[in-house]
Structure formats: C-alpha cells, structure tokens
Amino acid sequence: MRKHTILMLAIALPLTLAGCGGTSSGYASVNINEVLERITKTLVNFDAYLRRYDYEKIASHQVV
Image (cartoon, rainbow, N blue to C red):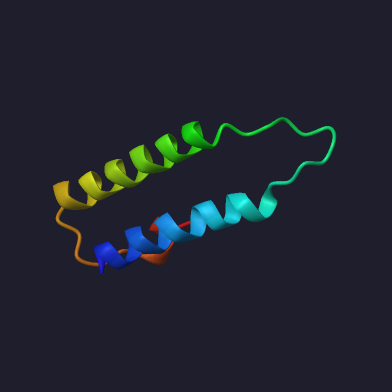
C-alpha cells in the first residue's frame, strides 16, 4: 500500500504542476530542478515516516 501511495504522489504532483504552468505574463518562472528536488525530499521523508511508525495502511487524512 505504501508503494502505491508514493507512486501516486510521484505521478500526480508533477502532472498538477505541469497543468498549472504556462507562459502568461505576470507569473514568475519556475525552476523545475528545485521543484523536483523538493518533491523527492518530501517523498523520501514521508516514506521514512511510514517506515519509522510501521504503517501498513494510510488514512485518507494523511494523503492530500
């Protein structure tokens, strides 16, 4: 279950960011490398948290 949740987050977040992006005036450009680094750190930390507390199932309030 943990692997499925992390996989869903890893796929959904970049797609969401790509869908919200654009080259409209008035918006700051996005450093995609920084975004991917933060996503990676978040997923690694979340996985470590799940392992530390030995979660087998994730409640709906834990997934945003």
